[in-house]
Length: 377
Ligand code: ATP
Image (cartoon, rainbow, N blue to C red):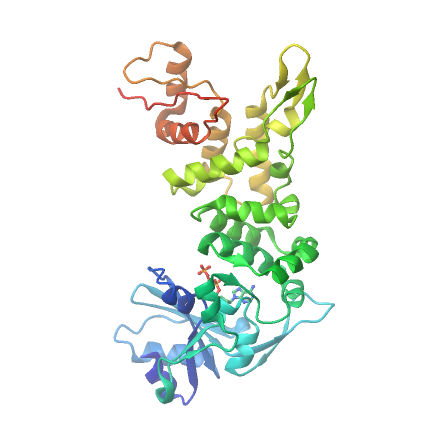
């Protein structure tokens, strides 16, 4: 239909970006598809709607020159091919109409610049000016232009690189990683909403520790989530050491990701020890302690959610509750709930008992082999 509409309007059209990438990688369940028109994307969207039997409503974003409609469970986004140029003194690029090549040049990674032709003359052809197909095969993240320029122009791309590395299990090209290490401070100009979107995606990937280790290595994490980097390091006094709570946290996040897709439980795993940095003390007799870290941690969750513009609703309360309860002594043994502390815990956890147990199991360390058997009544 898009092809026919474009032909009627006598313009070129292409499928571009994430849809093409995921199609080649056979990552199913696409929710959106981006169409680029060499000409007006809005006109193309209106024409497509006219040709579809259900005449879907077209949402037009005039300021951006884009339009969107829903069809066959897909959000189809239309944009006119554009050329972008960034200048030193403005965060936003100067945008002009352009060719398909111009539009591919403005994309962040070679694997996101792939385009499939919808034109009659070469329908289905893959237009791949930067050898993105090869990068898909070798699992490499590479920028079409000089990485230093790409990341400095739009610093969100640094987070996108790390997000894709984590989501797709790709490697970031060395030159690109070096450019992120040079430009990391520029992330400060990006809004917290956009940063949070990427953090959610890293957390939802199969092994989130990959993304967080990269954020740490590039120093981005210290800017975005200083509460976490504060957990790094092992102190030693009089021969007594505590575990490195940063790397431990990443293990817990990976463990939980094997057992739960719940984004908020994953956030709870990520934040479960954040109160330990400000409460760390050394006592001559008992060694290292983190007294009250769960209360401090749960208060820190509120501040962190607020800063990152995350919802301050029941989702946050759930994370707070998990942080507050995750270090309570748990020894819930099937059918044998005699210990009053255990009974209290089950009562306090309420409907969240299963999630708490999942977190408890993920948090088991060799030094702290707590029993987290599920309570069955
Ligand atoms: P996902 O849907 O998993 O988030 P995606 O690649 O589709 O992945 P979108 O944010 O929907 O991500 O972006 C669509 C396309 O727009 C990308 O594939 C890329 O070509 C381009 N794009 C998005 N953000 C940027 C950016 N900051 N800089 C350059 N190109 C971008």
